[in-house]
Image 1: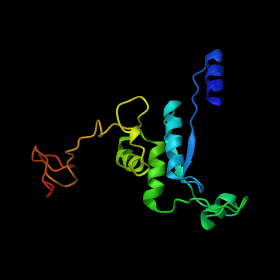
Image 2: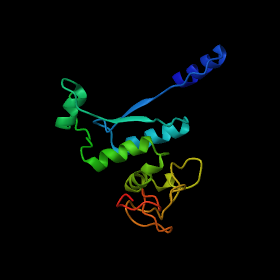
Image 3: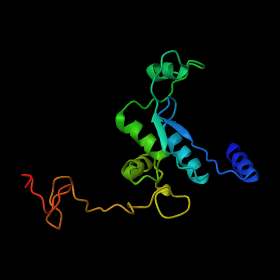
Length: 162
């Protein structure tokens, strides 16, 4: 609602201002399914956040209490807390599903959550079946390419600095 109001107000005022959403991933109580639901929301609202930060416990907050105890202090019920690096990375990657560097993590998360319906070319899909725009035959650092050069080194310069 706010986004629509903001865009309408800017149009009326003839201004070109932009919303810059800031998201936090892996907040205590947020499971993989929640992160996927947020990714779908972002897709549906054409929002592709560049600024995403993993949850960091800060002293004195309810969120930090949940992070360390795995319990919601307001109702005493257990909450899921992503603490492993890969689990946190998948939640973060889902918020930035359009970023090609996140492709493998997003695909892994969708398969793990049994959401293969979001992999494909349909308008509701988050990612295609395989990466597009990424050379699958990438040259790894320090290995010769087809041209005989080594990545990061000019063909006319040797390592000896001639």
